[in-house]
Image: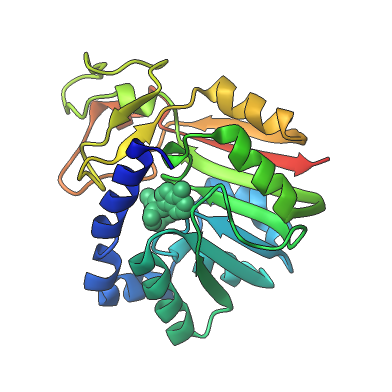
Length: 247
Ligand SMILES: C[S@@+](CC[C@H](N)C(=O)[O-])C[C@H]1O[C@@H](n2cnc3c(N)ncnc32)[C@H](O)[C@@H]1O
């Protein structure tokens, strides 16, 4: 990992203590956690009986939702000890078949061909410096015919400021910039890697995947409390989703 990667990991080690400090709140959310309707539309039939690996699993609420949709198993991977231990405790308390392992992607440490679906997103790809290495690992983890799904912040999102009056492009950001320092969550000097939509799609294809679904959505996946940005009023993209099949 490079210096920016080390900074980012240290930032997440601090920020994800939130999942322990707010254990009860996250447990309450976990009791009713569901994937977004756009995710269920695409994943509904794919999840049933699937063995799922979830890199960058964070608080793990999506894992509980995937299990409720009928997944046979969900294996969350995250490099933050607080994230994996609190997610494991929640899943165990609810009796949901999820397990968690510490791993620093793109090295999952798992056996090859162990998954029918690799699911990730909502603030995941932006922490990866090397997308080709990530997709190569996802390809290795999947069984033949298995799928990769991501629901993620649109690569244009770093450009939107959060002004409530009008949609504005931040003067300090560029679509083609390689990275910027995160100034919301997790903060603490974390470095967000920027990948254009074409870079993501092409890295996925080059790793040996066939794209089955690609969509852009106006809704953000995260609205920080007390913020109402004009950029979230439906006119510009804030998220995208992609489903790809391992050839
Ligand atoms: C925004 S959260 C994850 C998103 C998850 N879907 C959620 O909503 O909690 C990002 C997570 O990625 C983890 N992370 C970042 N880079 C990582 C890497 N290279 N390997 C493993 N975990 C990583 C962080 O520790 C953090 O828990």
